[in-house]
Length: 496
Ligand code: BES
Ligand code: MN
Ligand code: ZN
Image (cartoon, rainbow, N blue to C red; front, side, top):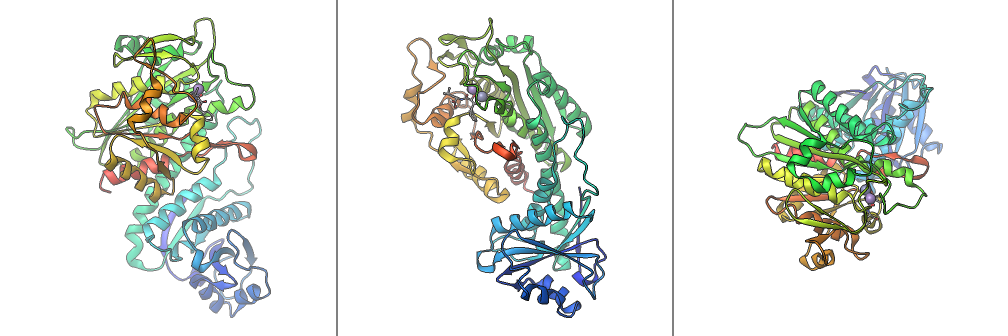
């Protein structure tokens, strides 16, 4: 979808559809009032009759409104003015774009960006509008033999600002929102692909294509190279699989050559059966989403490349399947990680940490400014935080605050969880330096504790995205989270 920014009166816009807000109960926003004046009370008449009360997310499409240049007017409910917050704003944009996409209009002009929102400036409103719009028109039909045919899909949106002096900030925010939107779409596409298509080899190929399309650099370390590096833990997860593991490395060189990079690490389990500690059958199909951390790294790199972010960023994606088989790792097996520390694998289903620990050790070679890993790591995190917030763990409070603030600002939120040493004792092993599981209590915390043992040499944050990376049920599909958080974090680091 294409976006543009403009300023001007709604009655004077030549557009297939003008979108304006109505507060509850029946109170016109200022753009709606201007249309009402131009149409000599046409809008207020309809609202007075009770056809649009202003309830959040409701829409009413009007044709042939007199006195204006546009073909249609779409009224969008905003809820009560005193309760109008980020959530309601996003809901209004979503409802508007969904309706536009379903009508014959292939283009629209949105005045919702003009509605004031406490503590959120025009840049925020425009960025979010672009992101939410892209998210709303997203479709995944790559695997259907007949593509969903939308008669005239929505192609172009004009986002309106009230004052001309807001144009430069709004333009910049629009590009950011667009870039995040395309990163989110990429992450969703990769997440939604089935495990038989989206294999480690497939991810490596997509990484190379992404790099050649965007000017990123990409290397893929094959099994032999990983063996030389001593990635015994990563490779032990790949033992049961027919698919060769791949260790993907991205470079975005936007900063000075001597500037320390931010390193993003994404869990790339392209299918998690649990291995010999086999998962129960019900809902196991959703374990194709176990590479959503990796997908978020792809998405973030796509966005920062498009924005030419003045920052050095490295992306690391250890990719493998977790399968049972004659050669698979067994409970009780002990592996030596790249760090030299040994791990007793008491449960082969706790495989995410086993591939991430070697990636964290590999990250040391970049002398990173900060490392953030992103992983669908634990079912326990879903129990703790549900599908609203990602779990955030960090060995640096300033870094944690920075990540939390980025999530807040992108409306892609995380919640700070404890990483106290008291939890470390749950990882004790009688036979190796540590076990790979810490028992039932605080499962998300002990998983983070495990990773922290491989992140001693740099500032590190860990995002457990098990609850937020995809939706189950009727709307089953990848969400593309936390691409918005990651890009916002990097924008902040770049001082942009
Ligand atoms: N990929 C799963 C985590 C997961 C499970 C995410 C369900 C979303 C929904 C991970 O590899 C896993 O299996 N974790 C185990 C760890 C346990 C064996 C300590 C879990 O959470 O059950
Ligand atoms: Mn698992
Ligand atoms: Zn997993």
